[in-house]
Amino acid sequence: MKLAKYLWTIASFYLLVIGFFYMIVLKDSPPNGPERYEFIIQNWATYNYQWKAELMMATLLSISSFLFSKYLKNPGFIIIGVGQLFFAMAMPLSIGITPNASYEFGSVIGKGAHQMVNFGMMVSLAGYYMLHWKSRVLSNWLRISALTLTTLAFLSFLAGFLNIIEASTAQKAMLFVMFLYVINGYFGIKVNEQNARNV
Image (cartoon, rainbow, N blue to C red; front, side, top):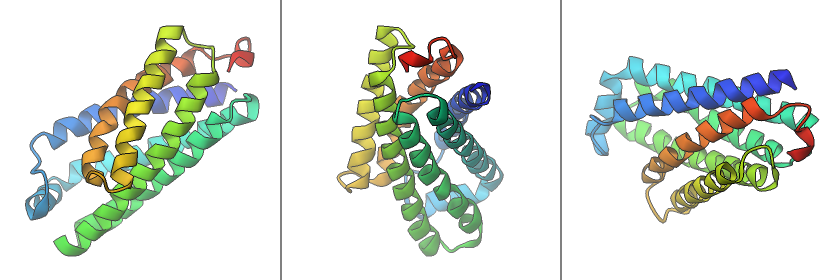
């Protein structure tokens, strides 16, 4: 279980750092269209690092979730692991195609990648909800905070997935997820063999 704890905690906190870094990068980015695509190409080294880091951390989070599911009875871990795999699968598309494609083709791939990210996050958030609903490892106020953040983020990603709002707009809900990563990282620190029955 120690490996699951370490991977989960590292991935959760590092995804928080990546998220803040991405927000800093995006603050100067045009909202949509060819200008945004051109901005990504001009800043490709940054985006390339960003997406590769997200791919690595989402994979670590998925692995740690499956490892936790082996030791702990909460089914939320399996759901989180599956969701993170979907999230991770969007990254190679973005990394491999974006710098080599025309705006038209790149935007088609980008929309597909946004939908994969939204779907992966929806599945993961359903798993996080189940995890924090059943778990008694964290204090009540942290559990309620996690459940609230999970619900708000899930509704945003669901709206993006159902095309109620733009898929890229839905990803602004990552701010909720970033705060959730803090709670999840703390969960990884707190959980151990002694309190495993409370998960």
